[in-house]
Image 1 (tube, one colour):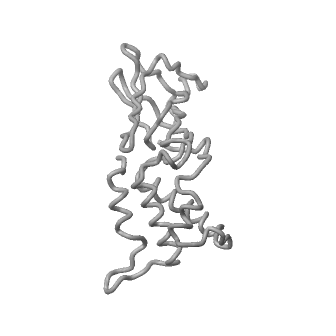
Image 2 (image 1 turned 135 degrees about the vertical axis):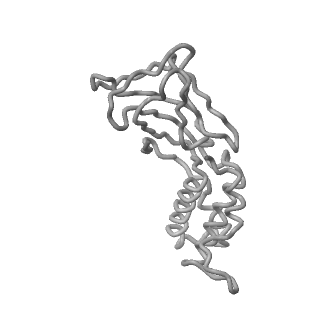
Image 3 (image 1 turned 180 degrees about the horizontal axis):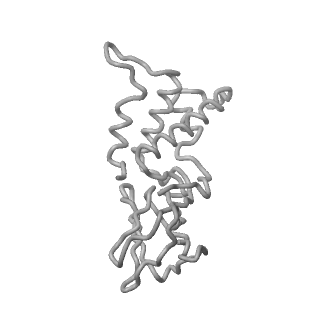
Length: 199
């Protein structure tokens, strides 16, 4: 199983203006914009990696070494919430790439802030195709994310991002508080993100 990004998000979950406000940087001060933009990207990658979710609408390919066996198997997709399965293709026994018609399978695409992973099952009485015995024989292209901009991302997630951004802006390395071990970011970030962690 492997993931590859096809179409990156066109927007960010936390805007530069919101990040600067959290960092208490004057809106008219622009000499730190490059640094804050970098922190927004770092916070985005951290949150998406931690929660296993996609924030802003994006398209991915996920590959599998084969289909589930028989009629009852399920293909589980990473990066919820998934809004659409664009295509399902596979390498047949002759080595040719085939696109499996969407009428041959059913998708379960949970939505909402805590949406679980999406799944694909074969339609009633239709078995999955036979693939060639090669790695990454099956490719699912899907669209995921909460929406086209940050207004659709759950507030706890964007707040966790802003906490991260401000913490990294003020502390350019791991910091110690009292006699405690160095910390990379505030514990509140974990508390905000854990309910959204997808397994």
